[in-house]
Image (cartoon, rainbow, N blue to C red; front, side, top):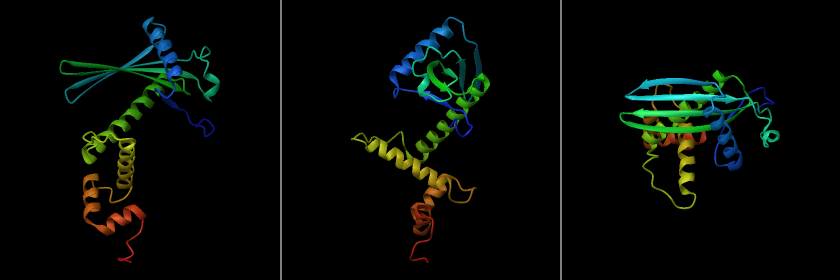
Length: 191
């Protein structure tokens, strides 16, 4: 990423438990003690209010894992508060960043979650992902991967004005269209 001249904003999750815990403790303490500026956004839409608070720290010399992350310049924290009626939920997310501008950090996180939310909505509505109760071995992961591949194939093939639902229906009903989606050429019988 850095070699290509780009920046990164990488979410810290359970895949790096010690690093995630260290960054979480550091940023939560810095924010709680008022040592980091916090940028806040408020969005009101469809009966819900979403408040996001972004904090970015360039103090990373203490971080033992710093040498393992090329271009690491900052640590980021996002607190998301969602209010729907009288229900309030709060979520904290933590990031490793190669950029140091708080506004670019906030825009990167918002852009990423917008893409994630859009994809999740389509997968749930068009492919029934949330209703899938598969739990054996790796079958849930495998089905999720197949759904994402199918969504990408449908998105990148077909007239731009056609909705995913229409493309999915056409693939179910039309053998030639389905073969074109899967293999990129007409079926042998049609050729």
